[in-house]
Image (tube, rainbow, N blue to C red; front, side):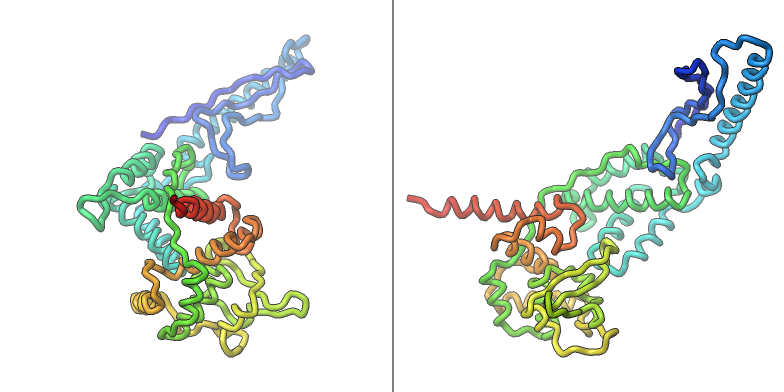
Length: 375
């Protein structure tokens, strides 16, 4: 149940002998301008703490009346949900339909789209297919979090969701609720106080230098898949950024050599990424500025099958996806002595913590290596 908000008029004693009037809200209200919650709204109305004449007494009476009028107005606004800039009719809107629209807008990135769609499927299961904005409160959000922790996977009748699937699906739900709040469809952010699901330790598959070299020396059909894969292993570029790369984004200078200037699909940040001569060679013959470099390549079951065949032909038994080439780039950079801060910048990570996952891989390799010599 949603909690009714109370508004009380209170006084704060100032050092100059005056009283400052303010409103006390419970529970707190969210202020979009500051991004924080508050329980106080100072009215900039002041009283004489100890009025000494009729004029000061009249002043206090008028100011208290005005402040009380504002308090009553705020209470009415809360009832109408207008103080939090919310359309009071939004509570009747279909939240599942809203979520589904958000899912459709994520189709540009396969992995991201899958996570959004997965979150939507489990939310639909949790709600029985019916959910309005009015249903989504703090208790609802907590309930969905617990649901993800305990529900059986839609792909299995016995296994539950993996820790990282729980983490990812709940984060997509959180993102959707936040967007709805920013669009003023919620009076307060219902998920603000709800803690997320912790991310689990994930195995990041990667190729060793020898395995990458073996792939480089093995033919692949189609050849564009091989060129794109090797390019990503030599640059760390994501599939979503590589697939839309155009010749206009590939530049050269006498001082710095080749580099690409592009906008990251995932973070929308502008990046400048230096690339080695061998990476540039994977791009093929230069075309028109607006032409896509890896034309004809697209994410599909066929592409995945061809990738698997190529990997097996090179004598590699690991399960390699296209994203593993980015993992390979990061792991090999750290293995060869590149500092983690530089690797983080090359990968376009916003936070160093994201890159530290690869450092853990290197540490594990050291531990494994230390156990190989047994007398």
